[in-house]
Image (cartoon, rainbow, N blue to C red; front, top):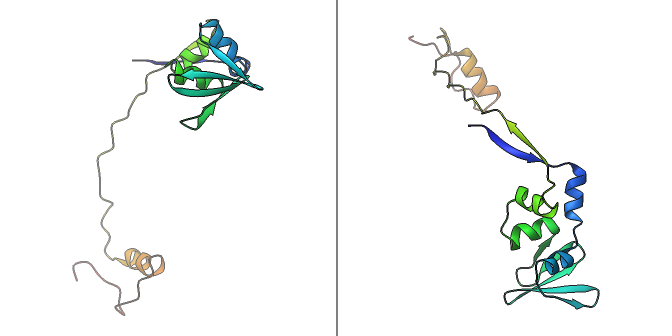
Length: 141
């Protein structure tokens, strides 16, 4: 099954981020109250401070831009939030091909060696073990 995503240009992303949140809320019929240089919007009993395209939730101590606002308070995914903020003029749908998974190769032991010199050298030089025998070990000896 092919997977798809909606591609948005950098200009579209910036345009969506710059959306004035107070005007957006007013257009949805929400009450926004002026408080100095900022606006206040009530999310139930919680207060959200809005300044242009930025918001801050006073009780949860988190905030963001217009895209984050729509995702959190309107319950939309990133592509849905972008489409919502851009007014449905959105991006271009790009469909990627399905991902093929290669079957794993079966486990095979390397060919057998007569001596363990390479293993012994690895243990001494790389793992820092001390030399225990004066002669190298032999398999089957």
